[in-house]
Amino acid sequence: MQKFYTLVRMTFLSKFAYMKAFWFNIAGTATSIFIYYFLWKYVFQSQESLAGFTMAEITTYVIVARMLSSQFGGGINTELSLWIYEGTISVELLRPVSLFFTLYAKRTGEFFFFTLFKGIPITVLCTWILKGALPYGGMEFLWFVVSVCISIGIMFFMEFVVGLCAFYTHGYWGLAFTKSALLSILSGGIVPLFLFPEGLARVLGYMPFAGMVSVPVQIYLGKYDAAETLFFIGIQIIWVIILYLAAKLFYIHMLKKVVVQGG
Image (cartoon, rainbow, N blue to C red; front, side, top):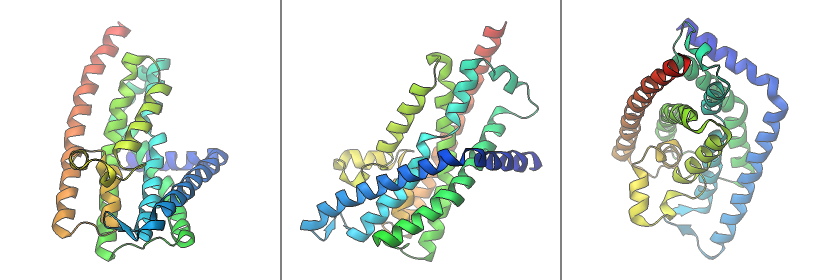
């Protein structure tokens, strides 16, 4: 536990070295929130609600969804891909802690930094300025926090697999861009899933992507009752287990590849 805490703390503190880039990142996310807000405001000029969402609720959906999906542009996949591309992956494998452990601690540190310095301030500020809806209730907010924490596991294992794909692509920027674009669309980060065709929306709602954005936001807004909330959180947990097993198997396969290439 001490090693995990140390790695999380080091990652958290290292983020302060890139504060200028971080401010630009915040500015970009805030700009996208305002753009989406005005687009939705135009849509709601001729109607009071859409698919059960009021303007205040869709405003909150945009704010929280954009905040959560803004993490897709980063993640540990770029660092892992870079290690593979530069050949330093062999050094990382020789460390006294597993690669899974190291990268998960780094991802956790990134998430804490994101939450404290971007997630909470921007969400509160934009909700106040744009008159978004507050959490539906205290329990909904607690379940929202639980859902977001579980979503970090989903995101981590996806990023881990994407990073390992560098063994085949021998590059990393293309992988990062593709991951960010696909996750933003399939998670409901750009277009809410309820706007997709009904059959497709239902299928995507059960996929791991929805657990990273759509599910937490809909819990936050009270769109699920207690039974539905527990059901979708259960699906998130199941996907964490499935993705962990998939990442573990892929990782073991890649270790053999490293040994072969290294002689």
